Length: 432
Figure (cartoon, rainbow, N blue to C red):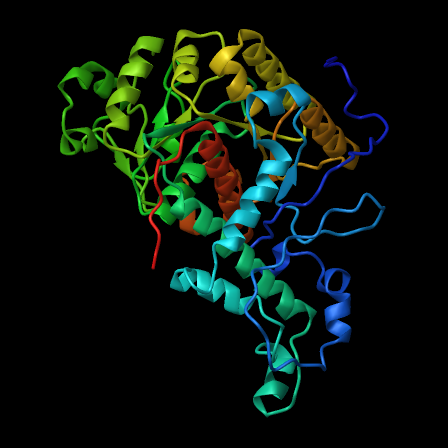
């Protein structure tokens, strides 16, 4: 594949793109209500009283027609090449669709948890309005159904609940790991690692470690909450003496998201592949999920060590030529190595961030085309957030609702990829 495609040239059509199932939590994160729910708005005066419980409706597919809208631009599913589908069955756009269908089917009336039943109950025929002027009329006893805006909010909540359930209920028979990397600096690797790991920890109730695996000290400790006394350098020095969770906790910075960050508190020796593997082995004894924030040198010993202990690759990109071309080069190098490295590339998930600088629509479409051509399984959109752009300490609760919702969608996609990569438990518990 040629990597010389001009990013500022003529707009390219991106075939087979479909909007995935993740609109933001906030009203502003959803599509224009009148465009998406026009029919529902026209039927707003009608109410069906005998509504049956059904699962949430699947997201509508993105149309290639100019001017069309989607129900949530937070994720774009990218088709995998034929060889990738052979090496990692169930990955890619079809796996994402099947996983969401499985999540929705799990909200059975007979076996669902209270949360599942809540999702199902919200997915019934609209019923009466509860918000705005329509809600006021409904409270007066008039048969007024919800408007387009309220239907959009309800749908956002349903999809958010579906993603959170996917993240919360996933299990594996061993600790799993996520590697965050793009050889191009300034693409948002550290914020992505912190916020993706933070969302995983917040939803699952902890047991997530976010680890720095760059050759030299990076920005992980600076962008994380807290001011720990010990960090990665000391953990590498003492790794053979860490045998308990209490001892390991002394090298971490606990976050309000319930994640534990292990970064560099000062100067340290250059990290090697052997040190990365040794530290990861200790972390995996006490944490279920490990998220690794890597450096900019994919040929370094530390990066090679991180690749050897990774299950899923997450690639942060910006809408810029150097950002996406470096990412594609990384994927080609991993595939050329074959084996586990090639499988890691075939399961790669891209997360596109924006720092507020002006962006060109032609460049955005070309980035999507190139990533699709490179075999990236999914592309998640993260909206601009001033809290991230400030380049200071990151706190999950300070994100805009739409930003958090986009990271939740990305986390669900990562979890589904992990379930493809790692064998599930041999037996399932059934509720009677």
